[in-house]
Image (cartoon, rainbow, N blue to C red; front, side, top):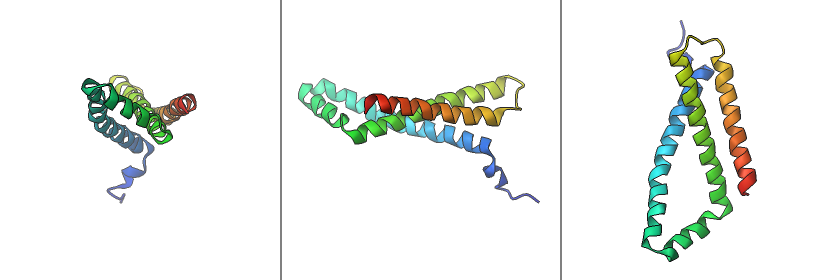
Length: 115
């Protein structure tokens, strides 16, 4: 008899979980982003302080993580659209692995550009 949690060792389950977690990460980021943009309405001095903070290496690294989350979420969503709308299930694991690799390459390219 299989363990009730044996499915969690499946790579496609991990891909689905990464897709959900990346969505949560993006949802947490958006209010912070809007708050930061709202500071520009208070005046140039406050917004300039935020921009100086955003120019630090730690924030640049966090932005790279954000780009990774965005790429993972986008590519995971495309994978789900393919699975749900087409009768194509043989290469799902390869597609999920390729999506993760592509997201990592996009984030790495972003980090090289900004650092």
